[in-house]
Length: 431
Ligand code: ADP
Ligand code: ZN
Image (cartoon, rainbow, N blue to C red; front, side, top):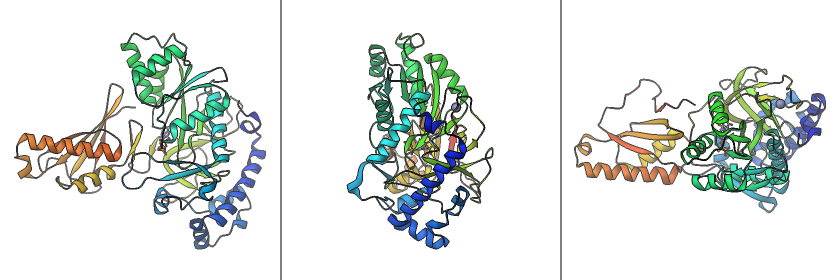
């Protein structure tokens, strides 16, 4: 363990620590964030009402829309002069959601990731290739600072450029690979095609997350790359990667409970559910300075368990993310809402408002096809014109969402209509 004092703290003691930190956070957001002060008033509560951990249920939820409504810095609890880093969510139309970190927040995050790398069997002697994207996205820089804190040698290669990834992996003797699981699969395939033997090479483990994956994919990754594949979970609103991570037992991800209090709720009623039930995961940050959030609704569906883990860590574990309460898709690591594509189409104005997104996986790469209807008149136009429109739409989607899509214009009334909620997405991927 990187920090056994916290990671294996007896639960009674951990709960006491959580309560103290929660009370401090509640006081801070009440004093520093007008959004929360208002919410407290609406609910008729005051910071002093939080007397034990169960009182967390008195606190208001925070949702993604609250971040949009207070864009860019409205939920910050520190002035910008104390902020040392700003990240923003990937691929949204209009305004992104923005999060900030003080130096202490960055240090906490590094500590968290150092723990994660140790969970994946890492230590000072390891060579960690960080193939998550560097930039506004939290993946790259998040992993980077934590692996450095641990004392490992970090290769900040970022995503893409697969040939180069494989060359450096061999030449530098990478032992731990951090990237999305789908990219890892792709790297494995390319390695085979180029006669590179990863299975008998130095690579020993992978830290894979930022998108849903499965046990089946774990088997494939472990076999094709000759490694142990670990699941890492996180979201920028709460911190970034490392909110939870699998230990060597690979039986669910330990939540870093000295920094985040998890809850599971019924997404319909908002009611708290007991451990063991499937529901929406909610987090409250209890040490964050710049961007503390109370009861943030992740929209991720999972299960929490308090059962003892063989590894000796006492933090509760969450299962793999089993789905979302909204329609968010993660395509090649980019978060995509069907509504974003819809608004690109509507703003463009040359098509009908009927569309269908077909997501698939060819080999190891996600593909997105957008079927969209055009008017009778347009469809009978020259092929060249239609192709031109497909190209322009593809370009528009790429520039706004940061993801390439194949556009296919179709005849009027060919996309099935529905009587209730429109079915906008067909996801054929078998993760
Ligand atoms: P990131 O920068 O890590 O992608 P975002 O805030 O953009 O963070 O997206 C967070 C979302 O990504 C989560 O709410 C969840 O839906 C998804 N996600 C992150 N890690 C995992 C994982 N290991 N398994 C499944 N989904 C994940
Ligand atoms: Zn464990």
